[in-house]
Image (tube, rainbow, N blue to C red; front, side, top):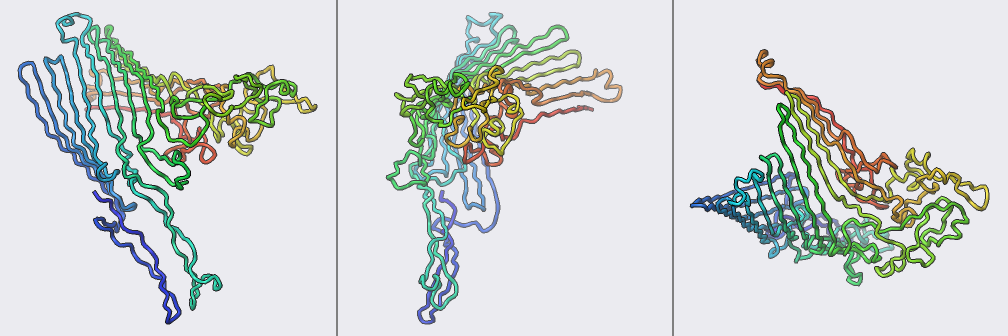
Amino acid sequence: MDRIGKNPDYIAVIYDKETGTSVKTSHEGAKASGKSAFGKWYHQSLYLNERLSYVRDWGWNRLSAAAVYYLETTERSSSAYRDRQQSVILNADYSYANRYLAQIVMNTTGSCMFMKGKRYGVFPSLGLGWVVSEEDFLKGSGQVDYLKLRAQAGVIGYNPFGALDLYEDEYLKEKGVYFGPASTDFEWIGGSTKYQSYKTTLLRLGNKDLTWEKRKEITAGIEAKFFGNRLSVDADYFYILRDGIITNTSDVNPKLFGFNGVATYDNYNKIRYQGAEVALNWTDKIGDFEYSIGGWAIYNRGKYLRYSESQINDYNKVEGSMAGDYHGYVYLGKYASAEDIASSPEQTFDSEVQAGDLKYKDLNGDGKIDYGKGTLDDHGDLERIGNQSPRYYFGINLGANWNGIGVSVFLQGVGKRDWYPSCESGFFWGMYNRPYGYLPKIHTQDAVEVDYSTSNWVVTNAASKPYFTRQVAYAANRNDGPLTFENDYYMQNAAYVRLKNLTVDYTFPSKLTKKIRVEKLKVYFSGENLLTFSPIYKHTKMFDPETLGFGDSDFGDNVGGLSGVGQGYTYPMLKTYTFGLNITF
């Protein structure tokens, strides 16, 4: 499908030699061949989903098949382009005696995001299942009500729907040089207006070989029910390989290409994920009391196998590392005095070390604290000190009913996550980030105090073990502030558990409600995000461990560091209290 658009509008300057005057005229860009232009603002979408099914049973066999056609297209006049994606999906399911199961899926999908010849991808998958509880040796066991083993492998195609025309060059039209003699201030002879030409700047170099990202997935799991269906178990292991992630590779292109500052996209990044998830639930009844206890947990780790990044030190290179790794210095204590500093290894990255600053461990024993040559063989005194990726997601569900009274509780959390406050995280660093920024209360109560009355500056409140160092502006800012270098002392434990939902309700007995011609009457209270427990609150109350990110994507300010915003400015999770009444007549 051809991209919708037209050639840019342009301005022509015509100089008439006979009259000595010049005329400036505006011209509308001509419609390109096979393309059209929008003249009005509008947004329209079309979705088409058609399905053809076939089912046949014979003996112990059952075969079902389906063909699905899906079309999605969106047009926007403001940007004069069209999103279009269509798929043909063929799938077949076979079972024998409800015991042996197989599924085959063939997905052929096309997208206008790519060049002709690269738009379509074929993504197959295969699934197998064995319902072990249907075998004679388990039937009637009295303990195992249902047991199924399952496995699946396949490829899924992914494209950034909305990132159009990355296969084409993109130019920026802007004002350039003036026309006309310099002696007349660039005004044409006989005229009083100076004219300026337009220039074009290459913003993006198109890649005609760009195509689908391929996600290769393998899963294996078990689904079971025991003890009269009171206990249910669901567990899976998964392996995901994201290959050919569409990536801006301008950082890895050699400068000799002459494309400094020009975006180029390629199927470059490659990430591997491995993990497991398990869910358990117990439901039972004792007389009129019904209850359920359930929970789930997910463990996931990722590793960057290939990553687009500029030339950096090997010790903090993303490629080859686990997703989310922190590398930093190991904390020994705080300098007690100038004498303590003089007798300790030199911190080469901080030329103004004073009493009350952090002291780090000389891991390689060379008499100084630094990051060496920045290679894997010589990374100085840096080592892996944490990982910011959440691990061990979990949830707990509790429920009970007795004589019309119902209670349900949902707890959610993360069992392990490290977090180091980044540059511009003013809610944590306060004046250590910028002196005119925030002043958290803890900075006035739990910071180092220094006696500056002699040349040997001495920490006076070391016995109380203050958490924050001596107060120095910009220590956690800029690119070389001593606290911008990650260390395990200020590494925060961002694990948490949150009371995500609490619901209490009461259903009035029907013998009472029918007297007022009401079939059912229930009153209830529901609360969201009522309580949160986290070690992070020991040193700061200004961050939500569930939303530790840069800024807020809703406002487009989710870029971190000096060129963006810090962490803690995300729109907060709100506590919600709801009271309600349900009436059925």
